[in-house]
Length: 115
Image (tube, rainbow, N blue to C red; front, side, top):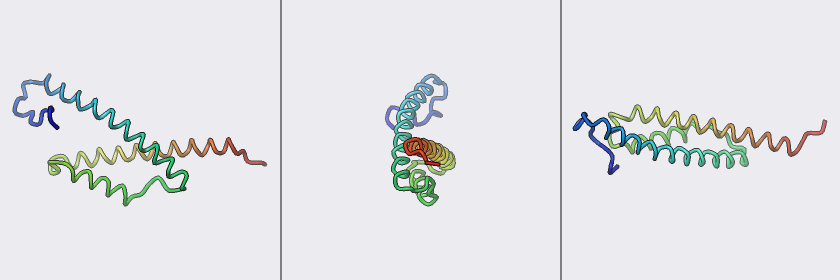
């Protein structure tokens, strides 16, 4: 990541520079997070139409493992990144469930059952 501090231990006195780097990273993360949730919404629509389950343990593990392997320093940060990814996956599954429930409710309203 060019432009970001990569070794804060080299100059621990410049807290403002470190915080500016964090703010820049947070801005990018907000945009990426929103894009990720947009994708999760699209996945929910796909799964709803095809009556597929939200949770796929094998796929989830593979995605997390693949992403942890992309770290430059997995020994130092792998545990934290794995937890971060798991939380992100859990949020996406919650969103998928909410989207599917909303779609089910809309379908039920569009096609009321005759009693």
